[in-house]
Image (cartoon, rainbow, N blue to C red; front, side):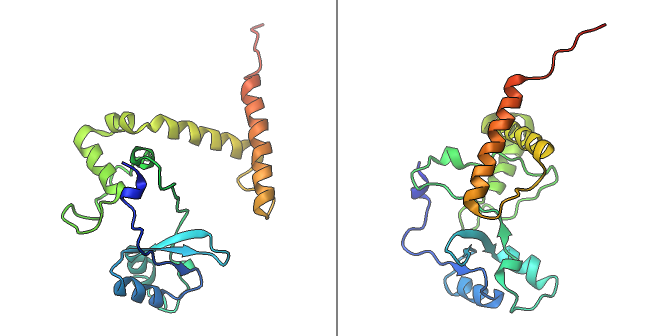
Length: 189
């Protein structure tokens, strides 16, 4: 099954990162949607605002309904190509051990990947679930990022995206060279 079979293609509602939270909530109610992509001024996907974000990050702390949505949205969204296989986009990051299901199985909305991961862990156990979803790939990626941060610091120096890409490529090449060279030889005296 491809991602396009799960997507809504007829009409997708989006908002700018400067839209106020009440305006976004009204749009979500009017169009019966639980989440809305947030775009920056250049039209790039910057985050997602969900009904849970509105509840937990706006209403519960008592923020003004006029708060810009950029202050309450969930950051770091990821996207996939419409032809991506659903197996490629399943969650590989295990939820916390005390994680609770957010959306019941009888909900009219599509199941949340995080909730499906929790159900899978309950069904087969955490260790077996990690094998099923290829958790080892994530572990390797985390190790690589840890090494990168230890060698070069935790942020990029450049501000322009093209320069950041170049900086990242250079850092990756250096890190690959370090890995290729391996650890120094040690001789017992």
